[in-house]
Length: 287
Image (cartoon, rainbow, N blue to C red; front, side, top):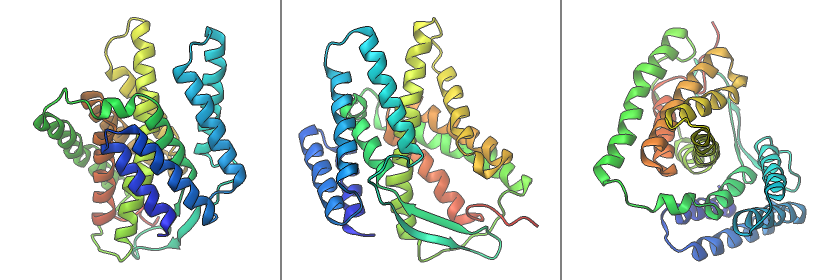
């Protein structure tokens, strides 16, 4: 893992746990400069990031008319959607692992070190009030642990047992020398990106929207977001989509109870780690 991604991981840690937003912005600038120097992003990518930051800042902090806010919000949504599918030019993500079989029972596994998605979601996290909510202390440490551990425990009967019975995964415990890079990649790049997008942005927006229409039960937003989370995992097939939907509900429930992206990230990562260590990853070979 080169300096760009190590610096990106450090920046994510600073964003999650540092109370000084200016320090986080300095880390973001430094990370992008190193990425530009190492060829992970070029001038076109820098331009699009600057454009995204400018529009986001105007949308979040300037008094605007209703239609101007709708227009800017639409542009931001289109940009985030394009980033989700790697459609914004100027980024050169690195292929770290290409089609290796972690065991004789598993399907081939590939892993790219993405820079575009984590950086944009990190900017969203810092510029919105997500970072402010993250540092609030309205829940005790015991409550935070409870609302993080319970969804994780529920993953065993509701995700892993159905996954095993369906044949999608098989019990296949192992240790591999790529574990360390997989852990850093999965927690900081994958889980952070997906949880900021699905829980911090979509789930919270849905909950606020439903509240305006008289639906005050936040679990409906959890359910709707979990279905969207399942749909984006369509490449894994119908069973995989179903299990991803259940997983999305557990991650969303953790965020609903705590209001903290890092709690949803922890549940997400713990589920992925259990899968990686004890079962065929990413799936079992079709017999």
